Picture 1: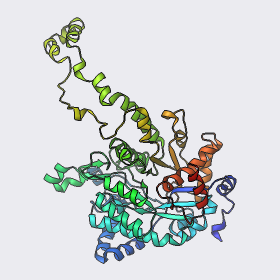
Picture 2: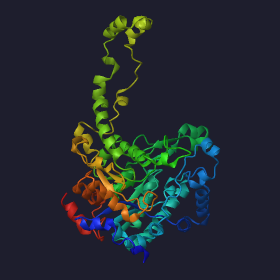
Picture 3: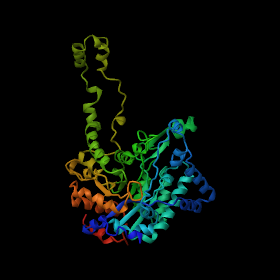
Picture 4: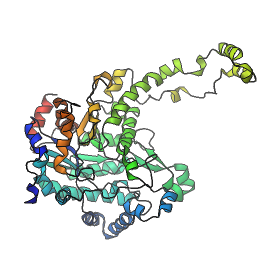
Length: 491
């Protein structure tokens, strides 16, 4: 049989040598699009399903700017409307077995041993439904996907579980779908977005026809027009970790001609925007036990953000700014003496003015404006560490060498090891051979970039902790139930 061709794969051999299971924290199913539309019709009727089909297949402006939209414009039109180049050929096709595996859960489950994977958390590939601007289409599309994924994966719950697709434009719609997916369908993982693009209010109000072209990025936890705390509270109640899986095709990553340019770093950009907002917006302070996942963007950006936060807090907390940066600290008399002595003719004309203002612009900052950390109660460096390290988990693909930075205790403040999780990304273009993913990831060990203990955390402990710390029953009935119980009991 063709699916036996890699039964002795290198990945399977590596798994056989490990003393722990391997969890894939982010694999992908590639949904068959006609089936998706059938489920949408089941949820919301033929008329809405036809509207969705037209918008996605036609790539109309107002959807997600998908492949059909880009391909339907001339180069001049793309530049004129700034339609970024999306990916073509999202799923590998050279290996027909792999292509079928990504679509057929029964085949996917059959091949997990070949991949060296004990348990897989599987995410949609139909991201566009989560991003549609049309409220009715977006909500019905996510509901349909969750029903479809539940039906497809239910027979294979011992080895695989699908993540629910949660629309995030408002907290109310997110809560409604989370309650349905977790409460009624029994789904255990949840895929959120890292941000919501919103129309600039003044443009939407005064020139609504231009609203799709004038947007800002709402990272949901800082400066949002909506309060998402009820959603985070609902996640705690339902015992589910929100895992953000968002592209960051915005700003500098919106080339009309190069998908490679757009893709490099884009998931990390989205994750960083959300993660930074969660800390500065005080979400991890208000919900210290809530875990968040940031998928497919790696962990290099997180190491940078983690260390940058310390540097900014040290120099831009309210006390430090008042002591070191406030214009009132300037000795105006001394400043004027120095200008008079060293400014020469160039500054002579400004001397009297500078004697009054000390060379500073007018400063109208209020005490409330000054403290940008007010929502994030940080009184020490240790406080900042504790608002970051325990709450966040970072999905990293097999070819990501920056995983080593997460485990570099000499690099990260307080000797922290950030919680990187093995994420195969099988089903997408960057995995030409599913059977080689674990082997490729293990090169981090053979090249001495991480230790075997780090590899255990990367491929098992961190992913298990992300979900089991929220829901002790997450792995119940699976082939790794006992391994996870032992791991969590030791923590």
